[in-house]
Length: 287
Image (tube, rainbow, N blue to C red; front, side):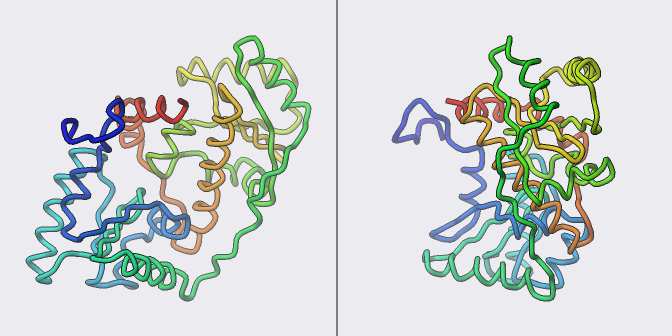
């Protein structure tokens, strides 16, 4: 695959290149839409797919991405082909996303519209506003001061959607772990919840303890009844983390319609956290 690169020569091919090539259609579009991942990251994911799509779709349980997922999907597609005499046009990957294959772009678009329509049928998928606005608090100032000497930037935000999860520690638990590999790549796998009324020394101790435990500073800090504080190396990185974490909150909120949130397991998280491929992707994103 490296030798097949035309341009730019300094980047790697996607680890999913071979996986895309398994699907025998002219066009293969792989995405992670919020409404679809609300199902893929829910406890009733397989049941919902089977009830809503039947033999039209292939459902694959979570598998570590890269070559391992390629081999898993290769076997699943062969089984599907033997059972139905055709290639699956819709492939759902638990805690990951969806592949849609077809022989024209217009058909791909039609399939996506159909998928989202069938997922929405009989469900209340209205969301509180996720539009983030700048927010100021004493805790945000304490965090900013704590990391200033390390040239790290922090900003606080708030939205109705975020307030739903920051109301108390029980609500926070619904966004306390990652759902997908992308969330780990950009937001890491552990976040910090700070109870309201925390003082400077207590907060400083919590931040130090987090780093000692996890080996990195918290990119995401949830202040009880306060703001969402993002800590990063640049304004650009802050916007990326904010966008990804906001999508994670939407997924968690909507997953309640499909049996509740289903996080990645500790073993699955560890694989992504320590995978050299994803560390490379982090570096490319920051560049």
